[in-house]
Length: 139
Figure 1 (spheres, one colour):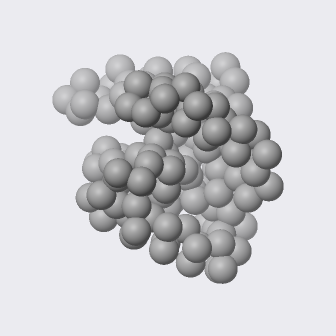
Figure 2: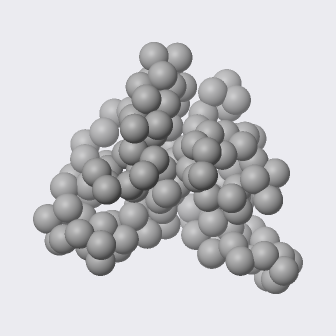
């Protein structure tokens, strides 16, 4: 059932991964709760790319590689490859919402969430709420 799926965003990954993130305690608690409830996590390669880059810039190459290795080994996370259709849907969203400060990666997530009928996002990013989704972490 798609309602059980949770889209992971880079803000959510950083909250879990970065000990200096102000949302880490809440993120760890929520993540554990969602796992207990057997919620399924997914993300896109665009979000993984964004997170790896942020960890590289903010921390180190080692932190970025550790994250990437964890993602590649994870059985609790499904990686959704966007492909041409989602890429074009994301482009349409990005072009249409010029009044927003949504990144293209956000639009890729939104297009994927629309297609897969996912409502919840593991993020503090307010853009998800603007797009009609439910950010599960409070900013």
